[in-house]
Amino acid sequence: MILELGDCVLDVDIEAEVDYCKNLSLCDCDECRNYYARAKAELPLLTDFLSRMGIDVSAPDEISSFFDPAAGKVEYLMVAYTVVGRIIKNGKRPINIHDNGLFLNISIDTMYVPNEQKTEDYFTVTVCGIRLPWGFD
Image (tube, rainbow, N blue to C red; front, side, top):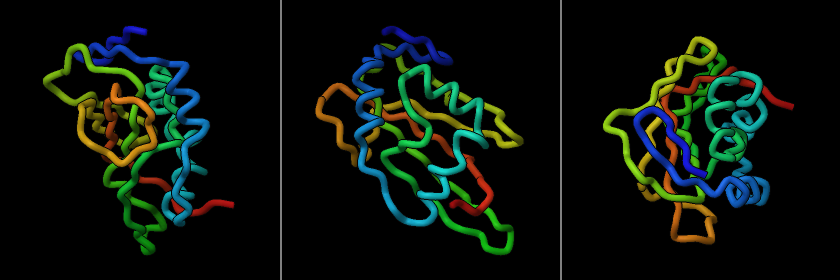
């Protein structure tokens, strides 16, 4: 499926991406588990944006974060997803979303991120600026 997001044009295999997200091995550290538990409820606009590419917001390939106990929040320096497909036209600027009081910066590129993709045709969607409350069941 051809998608235009910002000034990017992408060719995404939505069905393969949905299957990929369902079968992805997730990290079991506390900060990652916090992200999986909170992302959909706390970040509805990001969830919608990613779902257009078949991405489950709760199934990233890579997360870099730190916990700020004084604030009771986790700062997610970057959350990266790999997408089955290819970039037809890469935008010159990141895509910005204001979601639940956060300014999110989204880059779409061919940056290498450790992943479990079984294809050479993939690209990376990286989100910066996520800060979520601490706590999960």
